[in-house]
Image (cartoon, rainbow, N blue to C red; front, side, top):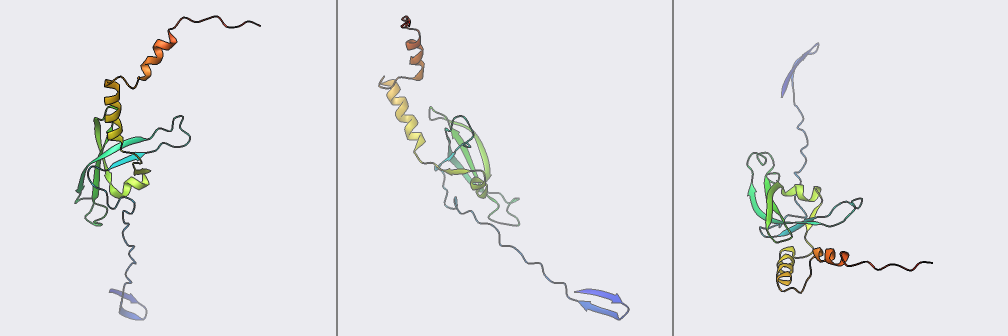
Length: 146
């Protein structure tokens, strides 16, 4: 209520309440857990469209970010999975931010793939790309002349 004084006198006027929007909900990653793998696919305009894979390492609630909206305070920590299966540095973002930053659930188990690749390289059943250097160093034969 507010007092208004004008040429008709003084009166109380009710102040209308602002309509509040419902807070956003994390839809795609609502059920994310520690140990899940997510991936970030590059834009179509990039030269190589190789996705980057991440492992979810932490889930927590940030009371500062979530003091007005509890969904906004739900945070996720993740680390990039290197080709040898080790984890690189950690990053963090709100759970709602994963979808807006183009993250998706991983389409393959990248950690298992890295372990299989290391076992195969130790057993010499898979040759690394460095073997191409040996092929390029072969003596070159002259081509046909027309």
